[in-house]
Image 1: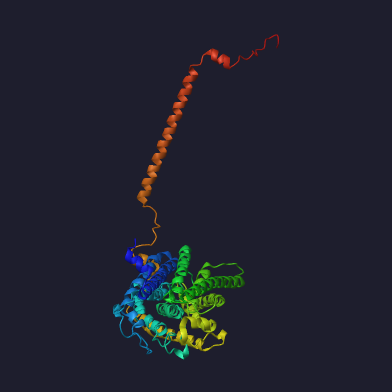
Image 2: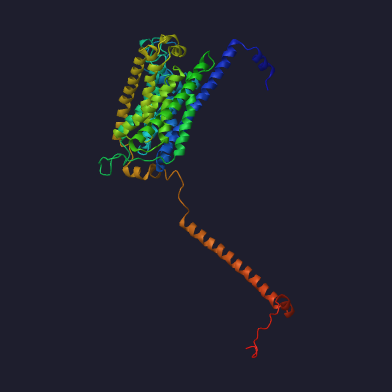
Length: 521
C-alpha cells in the first residue's frame, strides 16, 4: 500500500524523479536480457552433453559450470577494466582500457557489468564442446580465466567501447564509419570460435577419430554418435530462446526514443535468420546425401546447427538489416556451416560438437554480411551521425565492407597470437590432454568417480534373494490352490455317498432287459 507522500510523488513527479524511474526501467530491461543470455549457459551445457558419449557427460557439464565461474572472476578482476576502463568524456582512441574498473573500482553501473559478463561467459563456453572428451579440467579453467580476463576484453574495447579504434561509436571512427557488430558475431562468436580452432589443433583429435592404434590414418573417419538427441534439441531451443536477450538486449536500454523499434527489429531478424539457416542446412545436406548415396536422410544435427549458424550470422547486423536480408543471411549461413563442417573433417581437425563451423565460420560470415546488407537508414538510426549514413554494398557503399574485413582480421590475429602460445604452454606443462587410458575409459570414471547415469542393475545378492522370495510366494500360492481343490473334492464325495436308491431311480431310469431266450435264439 502506498502512503500519501508516495502517491503524491506519482501524481506530480519532478523531472529528476522521472529520469530516475526511467533508469530503473532500463536497469530491469538489461537485467532481464542479461538473464536470458546467462540462460544460454544451460543451452550450451545440454547441447554439449547430448552431443558427446555418455561416459563424458559429468566432465562436460562441470566444464560448462566452470565457464560461468572463471568468467565471472576473470571479468570482475581485470576483464571489465580492459574492456571499458577509461576517463568519462575522453575522446582519445585507445587500444585497451587503462583506468578505473579493476575489481569494479569506481563502477557505479553494476547492471552493465552483469550484462557484459554474460557475454564474456558465452565467448568462453564456445570452446567447451570442441575440446570435449580429451581436455584436462585444470587446462580448461586456466583457459577460461585467461580468455575472459585479457583476450576477449581487448576485442570488446576495440569494437564496442567509444574509445576503441574499430568502434562505430568512436567520435572519429575508422574510415568514417567503423566496424558494425551490434551484438557480437565478431566480438563474441569469432573470438570464441577462433580460440576453439586453436585449441583443437594443439590438443589433437580424440583417440580413434582419424587414426588407429598404430597411428595410421583411417580410410574413413570414425564417428562418435551423440548419446542423447533429446538433450541436443533441448540445448538448441534454450540457445535460441537466450538469443532474444543476446540480440535485442544489446540496445542496452529500452526507454530512449527509438530503442524499442531497434529491439523489435532485432527480434524479427534473429528469428528469420535462425529459421532459414535451419532449413538451408537440412535441405542442402539432404540433396548432397541423396546425390551421393541415393538415400533420403533428414539429418537432425544439420537442422540444429544450421539454426544456430543462422543465429550467429545475424548477430552482427540484427539491428541494421531488413527482414528480407536476414533470410538471405540465414540461407548462406546454413551453407557455410555445411562446408566448414566437411572441411574440418578433411583437415582431420576434431570438433566434438561442430562449434567451429557454427561460431567461427558463421561469425566471420555475419560480420562480412553486414558489409553487404546493412541499410544506411538503419545504420544511422542505431549509430547516429558518426557513421555518415553509410550502408552495405547492395546500397551502393563499399567502405563498411572494408571496415568489417579489417575487424575480422584483427580479431583472428589477436586471438591466434595469444591463445596459440597459451595452449602450447599448457601442453608443454602436461596440463592440456588426458592420458590415453583415461580418455578410453571416459572422463566420468577417471576423474569424477563414476558415470553420470546410474544404468547398473541390482546386485547379484539382491537378485538371488528376490528370486527366492518369488519362488516362495509361488509355492504358497500353489499349496493354497491344492488345498482349496482338495476340500472341494471331499465335499462332492460326501454328497454322493448320501444319495439313496430312490434318488438314483428317479435320476436314472431303468433300462429294459436285453436278455435273449433259447426259443428266440
